[in-house]
Structure formats: structure tokens, C-alpha cells
Length: 290
Picture 1 (cartoon, rainbow, N blue to C red):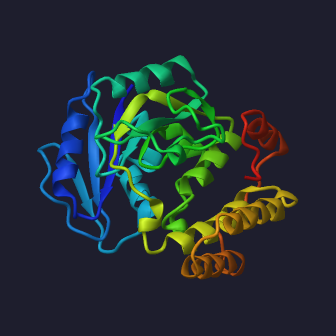
Picture 2 (picture 1 turned 90 degrees about the vertical axis):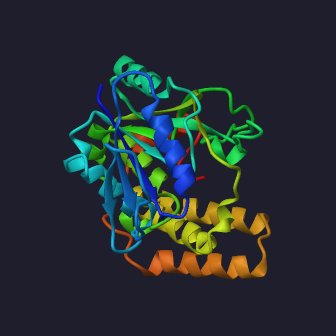
Picture 3 (picture 1 turned 120 degrees about the vertical axis):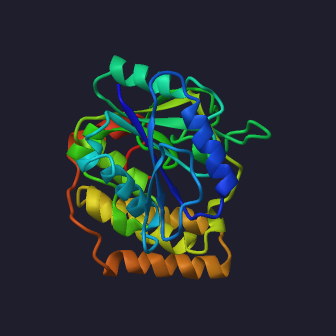
């Protein structure tokens, strides 16, 4: 099974990028083809054999990854599956690629594998990095309903059938958008605790656009993918959760600005999931209202 890897970079972490590339090159089994996308920035020096694409402007996380996908042919068709890895991550084990191949070959309906993200110093996995509601045990692998953007493997056939990541999202929730579309097409997603990406512990709110885009993209996610009766339920639940969490006043202002933007700006094509997909997500422990 032929694997490729897509890594986007802002060019500001050359040492971490080189370490990641070395860890990809050190994987057991056949060589993984790698494309590094400079997202509005020059790509630092990379080892021979690593392809690079430099974009004149920052297209955001999903936009940059989509460019990387197309570097492997339409919808990534030149390979069987693509790894998407954060440029400051590292694959500490050499068997991760082989485990991916084995998992995909053993289960023809498995479309996406999401890795466990662990802090390189402490080994701790943050709760937010376990993509299920029952997240207290990060060492338990399971079927899930979404995946982690910078630590995953996706069959190219999933992208061909469900479409690319939503480029207009720029940052936040683009993985869930693809996950819902993939599951609506009949694909499954696994969280694998034994496939590890080391990544420094960070807070998502470190990004200046975090609160606005999280709110805007929540609304877009619902408007694009949910049956009409669930759209107000989903957005209402997240409005209540945001208020319960008591963000700072500037953060709340940014959040409500994004929430308003989500309703007033185009969200892209609307393809509501089937009700049987809603039921499947519910049986997996995460109904699409939270």
C-alpha cells in the first residue's frame, strides 16, 4: 500500500520540520513520498527527494493541505493513503506507517485513522486530542466520529468520494467537515492509541483568530452538513457551552462576531447528511448535536 505525506509549514520551525522529515524517512517498510507546502512562506531546506510547493499567500490549514493533496495527483490518486502531519510533530516509533498499511488493508471500509498526540517530554495526551466524548482514557483505541488534523492518515479514495477539506474554513473544524462527509459516504474512522505523534502541549487559543473562526466554522459546519432540524440544535448547544465556559470579554466578543459571520456569509455547498448517518454517529457515542 503506497503512502504519501503532506506537511504544511510557515517556514518558522526549520529544526522541527527537519526532525519530522527524518522520522518519516525512518519508517519501516516502503519509502513514503513527502510533499512540504510553504503556506505563504518559503520552505526551509529539506532532504533530497522531498518535494516542495511554495504558495504566494497563506491559504490556511485546509487550503494548504488541499494543495499538498493535489501534488499527489487528483484527490491524491497517485498514492493509496496520505499522512497529514504538523510540522512541529514527530513520529517517535518506526512502525507507524506499517500499522497504517495493516489497518487499511484489514478493513476495506476504514477511511481515516487518527493518531494519539502525546507531549514529547511528559507523554501526556491532552483530553482535547482524544476525538470522542468519553476521553478520560487516551490509551483506549476505538471507532470515532472525527479526527485530529495534524496527526492522521486518510485514504485517497475518501477524498475522491467525499471531496477535499473545506478551504474557506481557513482554520478550525475542517477535519469534522471532512469526517462527516466521509461517514455519510460509508467510511469509518478509527482512533489508534498505538500510532503516536509527539507534539508539544499547546493551547488552541494561542492563535489570534481562534475564537472568531471556531464560532464561524461551527455554524458553517452545521449549515453545510446537518439535516435542517439539527442545524439550530447544534449551533444552540455550542452557544450554551461557550457561555458556560465563561470566556473573557474580548474572547466572547470575537466569538459572537464569528457566530454572526457564520450565519451571514456563504458557507459553501450544502449537502446534508442522511438520517442513517446521524444514527450511526449517535451509536458511536457522538450525535451530531455536540
